[in-house]
Image (tube, chains in turn purple, brown):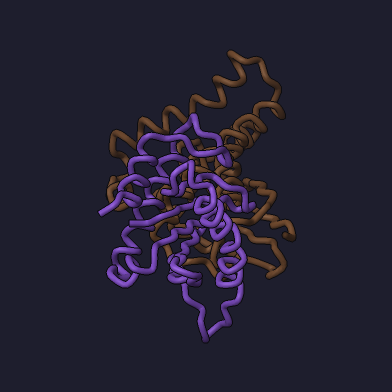
Amino acid sequence: MAVALALINKDNSPLYLRTVAEPANGEVAHKLLYMLHTSLDVVEEKVNSSVPGKNDSRDLCLGVLYSLDEYKLYGYVTNTKIKIVIIVELGVAVQFRDNDLRNWFNRLHQAYTEVISNPFYVAGEEIKSKKFEAVVNDIMRKQ
Amino acid sequence: MNSVNSTSQNSPETIVFDLLYSQLPRYFSESMQLDLNAKVSKLEQIGFETGYRLVERLTRDTPRFKSDLDVVKFICKEFWSVLFKKQVDNLRTNHQGVYVLQDSKFRFLSSMSASSQYMASTPCYLAFPCGLIRGALSNLGITSVVTAEVTDLPSCKFQIQAQAA
């Protein structure tokens, strides 16, 4: 469903990056990675710009960040400032509901808390966990 | 979180943890031959790591914090109840980054005899919780220095000095 996914640390260094693009198809992969990275500004803006009483949403899920060409980007920021960004193709995005999206983010967040509870994982390192990978695979699989 | 809260003060699991915890400072002084300062900083470091990881899990379903005060309130309520089975009794702040948390019956000191005899050994037993608080705050985006102070067992005061970001 999702075509690209990123987990980004509080200091904006990547913890986990994944795209569905074939390695041979460098152009698409580049484009997706580029979109993931540029979306960080929007995430920052959404988190910091909340005017009290106006849009002071306390929701961890930020919803749609923006759409570009045939892609749509969604964001999520945990209380510990870990950012999760998911890219979905526009054709797929019209089909699914807000709930599905929240479900994805919650599962990723849960998987991440399990990674950080692992005593052998040092905070800030790249994530290499089979369990985490399984959750990601499930979200990215073709339907 | 509910299962942790519902366990009574004297359930086997809390006792096991309390006993293990009371052995930690002794282990460091007897088998590792560390002096008081090295011991305190070691225990604080362990607390930091624990708090850092723990808070990631505890904040999973909480709404986003809007200010540092929100974060400290979270520490006083949820964080404290999970770790110490009660909430902080009193929170004071000067609104400039200093927070004083007072607990009138601190879990790790409650089994100590309330006399001045053991006052000298309290720093070892408070280094770990200081580290826990500092680790939790650090993961939530507040760099701080946490110190503890005991004047009257088993009550205890924690002072959080937040550093400007």
